[in-house]
Image (cartoon, rainbow, N blue to C red):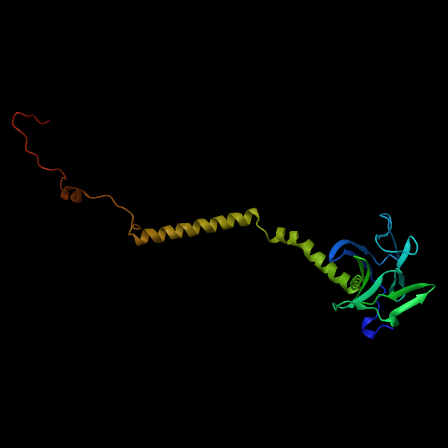
Length: 223
């Protein structure tokens, strides 16, 4: 019997790898919907398996049971197992099942079964079963409706609070007033804020000619 830590898992698929020595040759994966896997030295078989002695073709090599996968061993193959990353070791006799001349073993969770014949080895393990995603509940639909309403209200809110021609004109007027105020402050700091006035006649008479005295020869006539 399998220890408690090695209970089989019924809902998973099956993963198979074919090695030639230490080199991976081929790999196959079968989903949870597959109830059995037959092997034969034929490319049309569900598991094309060459180099193994099979009692019949096709040979039922794996079938699903209520507890998980049951692997039927080819009669000439050497069967070993590795549990959760440990090294391969011979299958205990207590784990082998005998039924109608067939020898089989239940594939446990975390267990890799290696069937070897000559240079070929077939490694079989159960594929990982992911937890089923919980279905949406009524409260989830409520939150979904609220989020949808908020998302749809964004364009309306933008139209209500967004820029209008009147607001654009007001903003433009404020910008022009701010620019005029800054220009007035600049002129005041430069002393240009006092308006100009015309000069009086006295101020004009007091101004001197900016010309320069020039002495010319007598034979030149100045107009």
